Length: 420
Ligand code: HSE
Image (cartoon, rainbow, N blue to C red; front, side, top):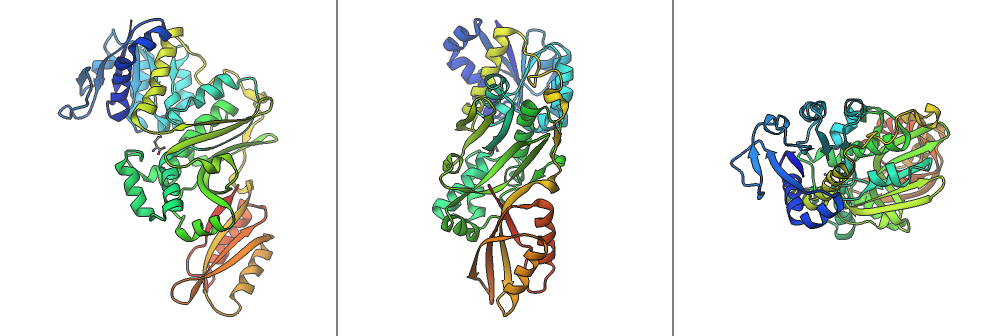
């Protein structure tokens, strides 16, 4: 029998305990052994968790319990879970975590600490979608050319509702929080950080890239407004927050930002809280993974799958799927300034003679070519210029935005969305 201790019995932790009980028949058949949730740790013991396990408010009750074989870490945060996971691994207990922030910062250290002890993290990326398993095992014969996906359900839910129902940004964020999709601090969702944590985990498995959130381009959906959605619809685009990893010769670009993406693309059709990730391998071609990226049972489904794997094999090494440099260790992170894209810009200007000529001149001086342009009247004698460009570099577009912002007839910093 395998005994499990759950540190952090919130929505996901309670689902883990309940799935182990409800689906004990299939779980023991697949694992070849019975698996039970023995105990859990919570901060507040007076709250009912709807679980049938021993609860304590002291992590030592799980970490020092010799009967516990697998520790499930669902605490959230970075520093405290790092210490807990480290202690569990050092005492020889297998660990399963759903904690993407922990892995975004400490995955390589944890791989070193874990060595032969099983340390699994399927639920850390895209909740119930077995994307880690697909990338680390199913596609292990391939060089990975790109990973592109909707990795944050909250942002996708918000973008879908704003597009299809015209709901305001603030109202829909509140709804996503009430539905339990959003992180405890929703700026992690709308600022792109949650998706970035997930992208960094996938990029490690695919490329062996050791980057931290601070090293990569991260933007959120917080600037997207109804004018941008109207432009997107008019030109046949959807707006999505995407995480993108792309190999270009010996460099890998990693970025998270809102994207205008053609409505015909599969990923543009993914609506609501669902996640979807496209992975292109050099041998397999494009593969697409779709499913619930958040929610108690969906996330716990991935946690329990990891526990079953551990019960089957007793160990899983190496944690990130490789133990020597991949691709001759030639791959490096592409500097953000060199990333190329097409861009959409919304520039709010005073609506007077000569403004358009001055604006287009600035595009020319930065060597940025305009593809489409619309002008829409706005409040107080101003107008929104909605402009899409041909391919340019991040450094050129950012320099141009800085110059545009400084003009006296430009009323606010121009809003930019990349076109994929
Ligand atoms: N806040 C996350 C999301 C939950 O909205 O996708 C799953 O990581």
